[in-house]
Amino acid sequence: AGSGISGVSGAAARAISVALAQTGKPYVWGAEGPNSFDCSGLLHYSAAAAGVRIPRIANDQYRQLPKVNPSQIRPGDLIFPESSFKNGVAGHVIMYIGNGRCIAASRSGVPIGQVPLPRSYRAARWT
Image 1 (cartoon, rainbow, N blue to C red):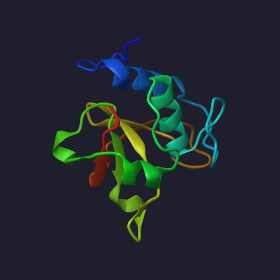
Image 2: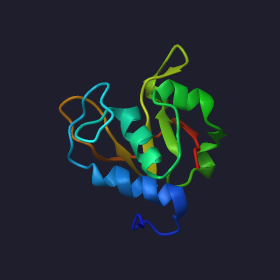
Image 3: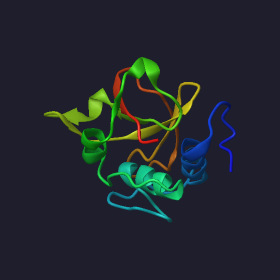
């Protein structure tokens, strides 16, 4: 299953494909799918579908996964917007899908969908 994103293969392509397939589903805090998701639940679910176990909570994903310099991100990487950090704790995570776009489960009332790559962020890689 390809993601339709050029230059992406393997687990990252599978996870992107699974995450994009959730477009339009509702954001529900604490939800892990398959009918609704919160931000980290969506990425945990997508990575699992690609055969990789990552932490469930956004801050654990940030703390436990290898960091990536923002200038070196690639599709599939986890993006933690600087604006989501409170006292050093990551409160939100999205997945980079390429071409300056990310897939996100943003907040209640906003269905899962694509958002622009934030201007300022930290990144981690799980693949």
